[in-house]
Length: 302
Image 1 (tube, one colour):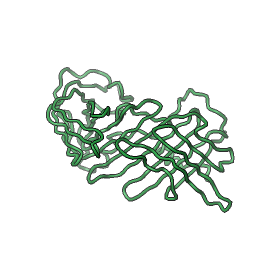
Image 2 (cartoon, helix red, strand yellow):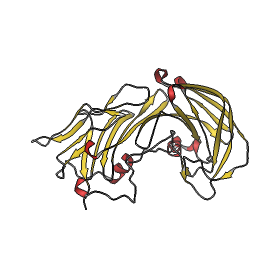
Image 3 (tube, one colour):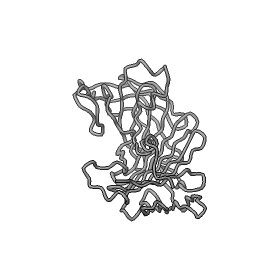
Image 4 (cartoon, one colour):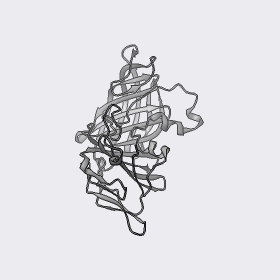
């Protein structure tokens, strides 16, 4: 099996937070030349879900999660084109809802960032206030819904920081730089990727200082982009392999279910099979195995 993953591909696999500014950059010339600020707010939806709305330039996102922790969680982010700035957010999410909100500041901008954001510069500031107007959202099948006309929120100026697209976002594949790593021959990365049309499905398992699992599904529903994520941290026994990189077996904890094995036959052909699936908000389990996946299994070297 291949013992290395191209550096650029590995970077994409290990980046769990997609910033709104990166999505907005795909908007073309119409999005350039404007002052970039980030209006954002959080509120509760039905059935225990939390909803975080944020916008930059022409990209508006609605992130939905329930019960996320640093060890496990799932989320879905809805992405639409719209208009945003220091005065508010306006976007049509079609079958999922609509945002028509005006921002009202309640105090001068304070130096610093919201507690869930990081990075930025010494000039970063947060403008507190509230939004008025209309915010309607309902996830597919009605798994969560919310309607509000007045919501406390903020505008970040300038948004050179990184803020999550969903509340409680985490990446189990990121390591503590100070953590002691196990021997190189025991550190493994397994990936499986299925690309279909404008959508795709990705699964990554990584065993280094900790054992983490990450699944991502992306695509579109009509004119709305959807990005669903599931992640978990498990004991080392949930990802088994050997120094010869001849097989990899994963059995991750919830929100995953089942198990899968990547193996190589005597004729050199690879098999990625099993019952492994991920559960995303409001949906039935999604299979993460099959011959349509492009797979890699690699180990670290001293």
